[in-house]
Image 1 (cartoon, helix red, strand yellow):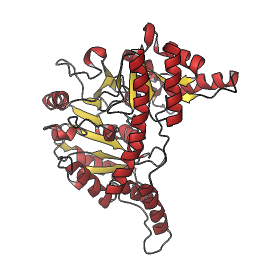
Image 2 (cartoon, helix red, strand yellow):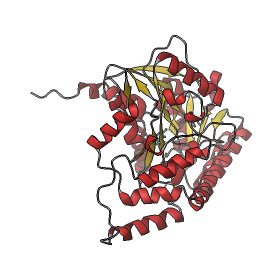
Image 3 (cartoon, protein in one colour):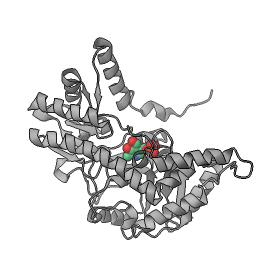
Length: 394
Ligand code: PLP
């Protein structure tokens, strides 16, 4: 009999968002007339910007024309999109070449697929609280997870511990769920640690476009030495509303190698084996994000999400509730008032004010007692949620 991958049995039964969906569903069943203010969602509420829509339409027309039609796309990405993204990095002072950029169908796919580059026996260190996919993707592959908890004491930005042993290191900055962002000095310590130990950092920069503080790094490659120890994974999902359109990119420097194997070459080999490239139409839409007009338009949308963050942060400030994030990230991470547990606070908000957030415990044990608000809901809903919070705790 075929033996299945038994590591699936090691996954937790109830995925965080599944449990939230079950709870909200049963609440609505009991209270069919109630409307829920969903501050838990990690999905965007604004549509794609005009520049992207125009590029998508034009690309669809290309596909209808015998002379402009595109079939299979290059496995590692359309060369013109790879060039545009390399240029986006260059404008921020990071020198990468076009063939160090790989186009993907999004960060989630890539975070799972990229593990093909590492030995099955390697261990993975995950700074927590963390986006749940890091742990699960490694558990499916049977890897040992080294949990690195963080907390209020280090502002949810953990430092490497000298005696920690890990081959793969997950760092996410700006962080989901805490909204915390590593400074250049803090990232440098991780880069030095990884180079010293021969580890590889998987740097999730899905929220880099939300950084507004000029001193904070958008990319790990702003740190000297990162080119010999890091891979960066990015997404247009939150930056440009591509959650349903699907496009991301990954940077693998050519100088990153271990045991005489270059990860960039290995990833070319992997992509040419496992994909036939991302759709031509979607890549055209993605390229429009990096035009001057596209950048202006996506930052207009990001501004709207930032206004949502402001409304929630103002309410928390007035209530004296501790939180971090919100300024350079689309998430606000707050301490549940009155010593409440995450799920207890979730139930209270759902039952009393019909506001839905995400219990911190779902992002790792050290998230217990904390709670995440997303700023991606509509402005109207966010305003009402902030008002209801004020009424409940004010
Ligand atoms: N990385 C982080 C930290 C995320 O929060 C998300 C989505 O919420 C992703 C990756 C996945 O992004 P994508 O939509 O590109 O798969």
